[in-house]
Image: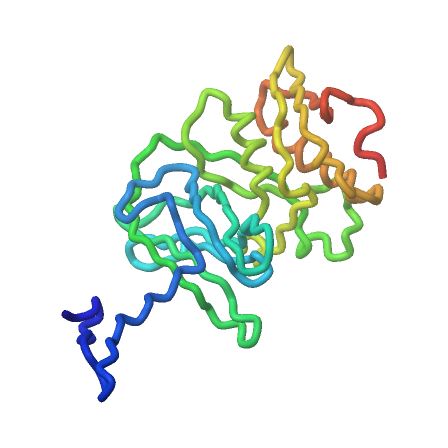
Length: 258
């Protein structure tokens, strides 16, 4: 009898004790979807669980020649140190070269910052109908002193074609910035876990209702102005939207106060 790695198993030593197969190391980042060689569309959706230092880890998607299409930071919802926590990641990505690629998830060593806990999954790229929308963020390179609070700048995102592009663009805005974007100076002032409760457009007015996370621990006039600018500019790129009404849990008054 041999172990999976080829190590023989049997009696060892003079006391005839039995050797056992060494236990395989457990993966600290487990991915439940996508599966190996599964087709991925837009957005890329990754589900799984992880137990990593400070619950933080990275993901990156590569195309056939190894070019990085998108890379970002993710968080596992671990209840305690040493326990697995679930995660879900959604990210758009530019058009890949070739029909196959790889998805990689890894964390960083707290001592050396080296990549550890690498999980790599080969994937195939679906060929969905796509469209491009703009999402607006502050840019630290263009406004170094953060003095133009109501000025935000566009990033172009490739998304699956939809008959509700305004809502899709708003959802894309809420996914925030990737590492690629951060390296170009882009910053979001919108909290993570902000969700759209309802959205509709009527007679040129877009009504966007969000959960409480939109204003959770938001302080300062400048940040409030930037959040409004991000949402309004993202929606006003569409010719049928002239005005944006932002609400939180249905309330438009006494919200997003500095």
